[in-house]
Length: 211
Image 1 (spheres, rainbow, N blue to C red):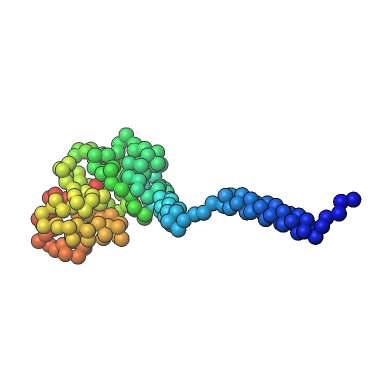
Image 2 (cartoon, rainbow, N blue to C red):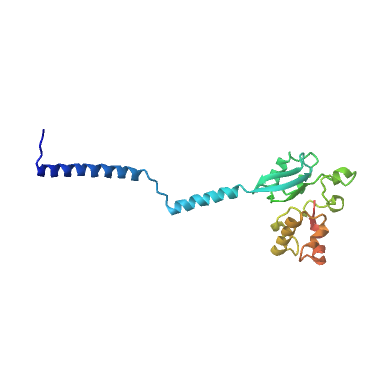
């Protein structure tokens, strides 16, 4: 049996203590290396990305009728165009007058989209004239309209500004009125927009249409 002196016991105890301290120090370093630190800026970036994804998932519910194969109410992603709504509604029929529609216009929530039928000057079919009408009198408003007329039911504010006497403020009022009250039933209804009186209407009535 080995007998240690008091001095040897102290040295041995010191050696054991050093070994134990070294062991726990190595273990601490290994745990520290396994920790991932996320900075405040990175957290903010991830939060912004999440908000962006939510915004991108916003939807618009629209009602499309008229000369499409499957008229009805549809759900589209925000940022889609009228052409996308037409495709979702089973494409336009052979008798659709797509030249009368701004297919590139963006859709908005609650929008009513009417795809008009082709109307001829002679032999106008009453059923085609009124189908999908939703209160719009096609027969009196666009049978003989020039193709360059501006459709006040789906044109942009920028297009409205090309009309005589219609500036940015009035153009925005027209778009806002249409958004809140639905499409104009006849061109005379544009006079319901604040700021458009009889004189201004007379100046633009030959350049606008509702089909």
